[in-house]
Length: 353
Image (cartoon, rainbow, N blue to C red; front, side):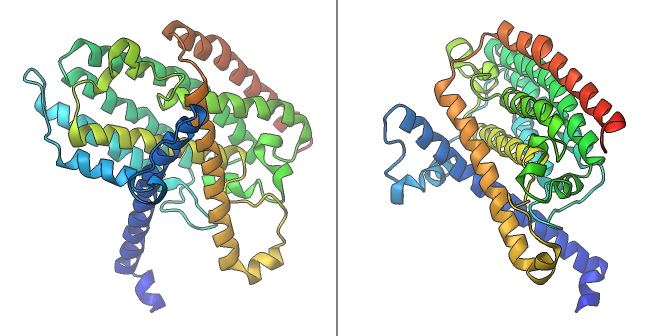
């Protein structure tokens, strides 16, 4: 039996099974994240939120799915039909394939590649094309403006995110996401947000965590940085002309990217699947399956925490003006992240490594 799983056919079956498992996990997570987002927003405004479909309204997202699927797809007469329909498909495919390198537990990742960080940068930089194509193909002013805004916004904040990730790479000495998580073992005081076991870097990495979180809000077009789809200015931005399932695909891609950013915050700064307390190697060796299960639960809880932070920012922070958004990215976050890279690199060369 072991020989079968080691064969090309067995490897293919394992890989396809892993892809299906992660895809189903992400899709179900998106469904319940939308429900959680609406519930948190409702609680802030002293409302009940979704509470009719299913127990406590838990099935509301699935009812919305049925509604979107059954509605007619309307394509504007002046739109480029091929590009119009291709744009949401590109967005959702790129949002899902980015999860291929995310490690959920020790040895539990679809592709444990040595350049996982570079892979994520490549996929995230391609993600903007779906939004630009959707805005341009609609052949309308508001969607086009929304697409242009999104391109400028995502490029601006990708620069800051890139430099912040460099600080983590310097601490871990690797671009492999599993290695980055392994380097944070031994208790929460070894997490990168606390300096990765080097206490002077605590004063560098905590601000980097905050900057990464705010940049992730801008990168995923979440309030208070939802300028590409600002309803008070552009009706719905690049999504104006979309309805039915194409609109749902854009929304699915956005939520999957938000969850990916929550996972990246957990992996890069909070130890990923690592538990907050030290675990001996002997205990891991004798309780490997239990440790892996606890790691998955810990990782999911960290993602839930960061999603709550995303949702609460949407509920309580007013929207920025576009000039304020650009100023924050280029004149504040970029210099701060550059200084952080220099400080961590200096500590890496001259400090107690």
